[in-house]
Image (cartoon, rainbow, N blue to C red; front, side):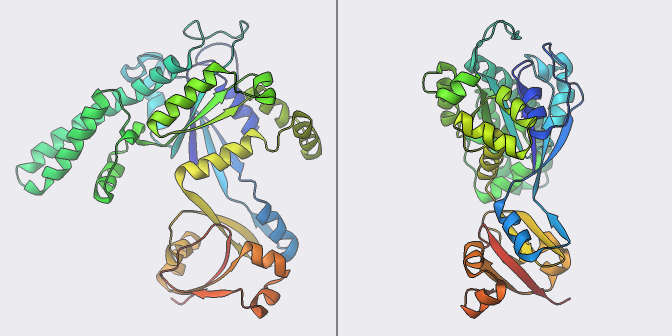
Length: 364
C-alpha cells in the first residue's frame, strides 16, 4: 500500500512524515522545503505476527508494510504549474490513497502560506487543484471516446459516465463523491483520477488539544464536517507529539504514551484508518522457515489470496487449510487446534477473513 501525504506548505506534513517513518526528510518553516517526494517504508505493527513468531521461532519474520510518500506542499494554481505543481500532481497520481494533512492549530511562530488558519479554505484549495487536474484528463478521455464511437456505438455508456464525472468535477465535487456500478468502476480505474482516490484527513492539532480533548477545537470540527460530506475519513494527530515519540525507544515510548493518556501512537492509528479506508485485511502464514503477514482486499477468495504468495499457488490451487488466529492461540499449537477440529479445509469459494492463518495446498 502506498499512501501520499499532501497538504499546503507549512501544515506539518514533513514533520509528521519524519515522525512516522523516521526517514529524516528535511522539515523547515518555509514553502517548498520538499521538492522531490521523500519515501519511507514502515512495517505494519501486528501483535499476531509477534505471537506467531514466539510460537514457531522462525528463521525469518516478515510484516506487511506501507510506503509513505511525502509530496511537496501544493498551492493555488498547482494544476497550472504554480509552485512546480504539475510535478507534484504526477506523484499523487501514483499512490493508493491520500493522507491530507490539515493545520488545525494557531501558532504565530509558524507561518501559514495564506496568512491565517482556515481548514475549510485549505482543504478547498487542495481539492480544487486535484479536480482541475482531473478535468483536463477527463476532457481528453471524452474526446478520444467520441472519436472511437464513430466505429463503435457500444461506447455510448462510457461516454455518459465520463460526462457525468466531468459535470461533477466542474461543480467542484471530487470524482469519489459519485457512485459507480462495477462496470463503471472498471472504466474509472483505467483513467486514474486523483480526486477518485480515498482520502484520510489528518487534522494536525496542538499538543494540548490532542491530550486534553479536541471537543473545543473549532478547526477540527470543520474538518470532520467536510469529511462527512464527501465520504472521507478523518483523524486527529499532533505532529509535534509524534515527533517526540519517534525519538524514544520502545519502553520509553510506552511510558510516554501512558503519561499522555494515549493508547496508540499516531502511526498505529493512521495505519488502522488506512486499512479501513482501503478495505484491506491481513492473513498470515506460519512455520519454521517464516512467519509472514499478507495484505489483501476484503472479500478476496482463497485462490486469489494464494496468488499473493506465488502465481503457481493460485494456478494450481487445491484447498486452503485455515485456522482462526484466536483459536490457534487458545489451543497453543497447530497440532492441538487440529485435534479440536478447528483447522478447516476450505475450497475455491472461501472468502478470506482478517487474521486467518493459512496453509495453501496446490499442484502445478
